[in-house]
Length: 478
Image: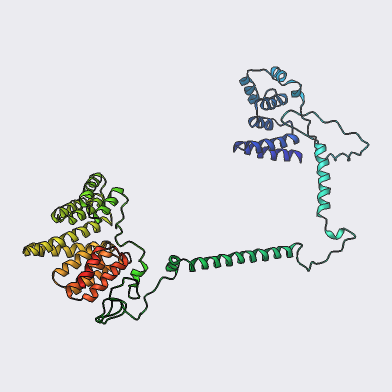
């Protein structure tokens, strides 16, 4: 029986050694040698998975002690450059301790040692390969079996114990439930406090209230735009009154979209630019200092020669428009249009088309004034195509709406011009756009709708009280 176990351990150890699992192979081969210490194969394989050189030499010595003619052992000894006697001398006396042979499986385990009996002396073991006596293994196995049988004995064998079914909750379960309730109550209290604090903050912060409780489009007593009838909220009344001056305070007649955007600047740069030079130049152009801004924009155009960006071209053209150099502005934008294929981008083409539509609308206006009718017709047709393409590409640009409105105004089709402006003001980003509001007021003024033109001036001043064109329109309508 022991021989069969030794063979099984040896077989498993050799398989583990072949698969590279040296620690497992070492343990299995040692188990095999405990049961069959005279196995040449086990010593040979144990030598192949030894932890260090000394352990390998011990295994080699044991192998050659069992069979001095083992060819693989002799080859290993020759590779060390030693004889068996030299190997024994190097290992010292410890190498003489050969593990005892395993006792036959039929030998009964010795009786348990009593307290009066002295312990038997331990058998010397080879270093690194401990091999206990088979008698001790059998004795330990018998004691372990007794412990396992006692542990697995059914409860009924224990006398003096009465077993009953548990009906109450487990120990500590009530405390756990109480703790959970306390935690739930604490979380609820914190949420209530946070809600109260948030409500107080919102009620005392107009900006927060505007975000959470923004006005919706509901019918009002004075619809916007105002009707031709006179109202006490806007404009000069036909009869003397204690307050004949026009007051520019917010009133219910302000468009809802403008009221929601009353805190923003109407001339925000769009599309937004990250280049500091361009942003400062746009500010100078809006302030009327075009001569100061243009050199910087020309330099910015030079900087984008290797990496195309239409922004400097566009704002340089708008600066030239301020100076009245419309042909140069158109040429700058056409240069940008020729470079569009260099860097495809969904936002680049709409921006260039918007600029060209606006410039061509102004050029057509000048051509009509100079009686160059054919040139004016070609430019106006170009304005419609480019403006519509720009609106389809990016409806947040203001220039294509202005260009189309001026194109229809040149034909004195003010109703259509106002419709285009309303289309632009319907875009949330353009709801408070100062230029679109003023353009609509100008169209009303040209129609002779002075009351409606005055209302547009009021809206423009509501957005930006410092807007000079709005004051001029108000004076003209008065």
